[in-house]
Length: 509
Image: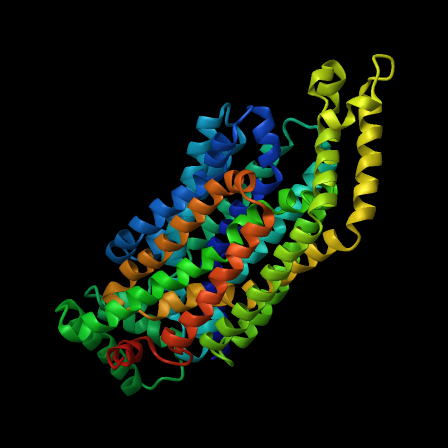
């Protein structure tokens, strides 16, 4: 039995490594995005396009990933995900221009999109009901672990090569090729999903793998389980009225959980964390350190969520996360409003410091507020940096606890997400669909998630120009109030329910 449990855990970890590369790929760009913008002279619109290219790829991957996953099997699709990740990493690192860069990121995004369909689905289908939450949730844990390693990797590379390096960002993106290769080789050791095998005329092989997953099952119990899977498949293949009702409800639930996940602002805040913190007076080095702190908090509270998901249940965690979202986002909006003047001065000072070489050679680029302090004799790069340093010090003193309050609120927001939506979303979507429609349903939920993630990442730089931070964080807080209402009115509890029983339960609603 211990051997079976270890084997099941190994399979789940191997499959969940797709989530590690997903998380790494998603956040590694945050350490490179400002350098990329300045290197290629990108406008806000062009920069938003380059930053969101991977996310548009996830839309494509999540929309079209369900078909191959249902037709060719879970294992083959999982292997191809690793290949897409590898190609993307190499292409991004060696991109000579923004077009090649965007295409490479798009390829990686396709891999991410498909992984959010195939990986949680595979793990849910090989897991016993009483362990399904934690095992499927490992995909989310690996996403968060990937986020942490990416930020640490970015910080190390930046420290080794220096903030002025023109190639550091290429190393940041290219290093992803290593875990992509490791994952690809490990994917060869995975079995096929027993439920997919049984529903695709490979009964004996599916029964054999089910026996490995459930070694305590007698022959009679094993036959009974196979029969239940076959019966559910026969019902689904007819697309009867009995199937349509749970499928329709599952589609609505999958759409809304993905919709609210992104309307919390999670992807925008993670992707632009250094920039957001820079708006409060943290310099680039501090912002990268704090971004690492954010991902560490994400990792810790993801572990908390996975510990609780099979005890408290999915619905309870969504409640907890929603309250945390609302409080942290609302306080963050208040802080940006209350400290807007010193925050603006600090951001101007950081910008002045970064532009020192250009200003020293062209005084017309010096902001008007500083022109009274300069003469042709004292204008130099060191003078500009000295003025910027004095201005930043003064702004930080005026801000008082404001910048730290924003950081604390963002950390609380991340903790709420990790315990709630982050721990639940991939588990919940993989549980609620009938077997024959599970790939399609997973695609719908994932596509919704990534469409809104791509839109938010694309428009966020423009939103920061058009709206205040107070308005942006206030909007996210209001959307989380709506999520709370949705949980209360619609979300069922799926803890400890077999995938076959789930269909029957949703039929009664």
